Image 1 (tube, helix red, strand yellow):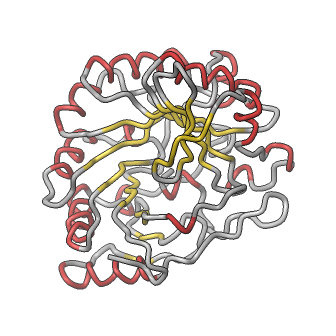
Image 2 (image 1 turned 120 degrees about the vertical axis):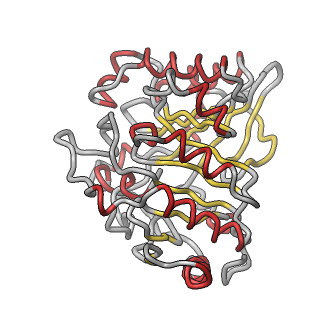
Length: 316
């Protein structure tokens, strides 16, 4: 399935909950938010039906997201359902890792392919400040359990925030020096909680290259520019969603927990999928793919995301 700009869409990000056990400063307000009721949230059967329809249109990879997907009761059962769908080659998950340790083995057995771990600092005190209620030790326990369960080395996602954690760039890069993992630095996007943050919070991925000048570009991996250096066991990825718009290579759509397809993370456009079946469902997904815009228009301090939803409502 191609959109109107010739991009082949083969990747679906599926939000399974808008709830999270953390309250990260760039994602959720301190007091929490009003979540969807149980009846407003897609059932596992509805999610599987949407993915089956998408697979018939050429989607081959599904990423389970949230909120925090591991707070969704029965998440292992959903992973097993998705991994058995014909045409789906890969079922991945993005998680903050704090609840991963006791579930890692079961998720691997159920068919989960890969893990992305969201981790914005390597300092326990700063982790508590950024997440407000999380503990770094829980993330590290989860990563250790995933390794023992047989998962391939994870991708570590670090959101760059000027004056908050950009001074840790070299420390994160050092993980890729010592271990065969991909550490990815994601530029902060002006949406939701941080849309009104001062411009200095929005730093370019260049701060990583300035901190570790020996890094050299070695290719691309999806939306990430990949870097490495002699002696590195892993790689460094820069996801420059704002400073180097990568929309021309976008291969994804997103499905929200209440069953609406978003052609673009930053667009207000949504296509309702809930209640549709068979060919009608396929046609709705196809309309969403065809509605993908050429690019977003984010400019920190000038233009924020056009979506009325926060990231935890969309699926990060």
